[in-house]
Length: 113
Length: 115
Image (tube, rainbow over all chains, first blue to last red):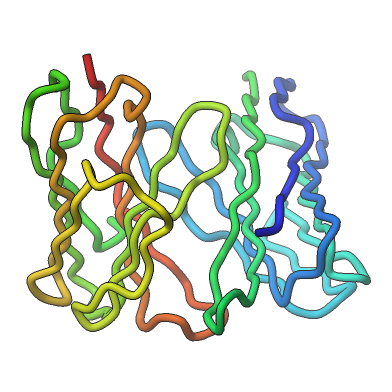
């Protein structure tokens, strides 16, 4: 089973600042997803990236899949308090003939007004 | 509203109790999942059901017993749990399993505390 490390583990920033969250693995994934989980709720899918080097944008959020499909980053521009939450990456792996998602360790973001 | 509901939202139980967690999905999906989310640990897949048949059991202790009577309902029966089983238990569903790049829709979770 592959391991996904996310950094930083915790991040507290002021409204309006920019930030980048990283998701790293030593192994290759066929695709990678990013989720946001707000307190008291389950994770909600933000994006799926599939191709090495792929960049996707979702309003102020920019997601990039590494060229070698081993890592990914999430960049937030002009963070807002509504961005507060736990950000999870999940890499898709093929194991025993089935596809499964392996979740990262998470980055807990707090944006202060 | 994600279309996946879980009850109860919070549960406190002693180590000798028997309780059940319930999950219901209103999305017409065929696959349902149980995950465990503990502090400082990645989300762990516990069980997968596809068309009511269990297709995954990731070495989960027998004190956790899943049940899937139909594609819309999933239960997790709990018996003689340990304090280290305290966690957020998340249910999810997807159209099918194990198709690639499936979007999983998560419920809000049941926060379990074992005393």
